[in-house]
Image (cartoon, helix red, strand yellow):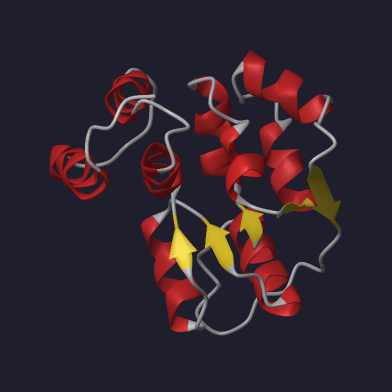
Length: 161
């Protein structure tokens, strides 16, 4: 299964030490160059910048034109590029967190998940302790409602590795 991944999920999976879940869940992980540039930005956390500057072999970085089509005007360049790439290669799924970008991706017919979905799916496969991963995520700047954390725990269970 090919996944296109946006900056936010990459950032938070690096921050919580679970970035290696991606190649375990997906046969191919593709990322637009615009996303890598965001991760290397001077304002990104050092650990994220370092990771993005020394990408693992399982990441495939793709050049994409900066396409702004109807409904995508308010999205960031990386989000637009991720959606465009997912559409152009007919990716099985796009991993993106921002609400507006998720909505646009869904409206364009893409299958969407986010950081919590990745962690949840990994937990169902016994690859990560969901409760611990969510606890680590809560200690970052990751933003979502407490209800969404709770729903993720309820949906994916509390199975431990």
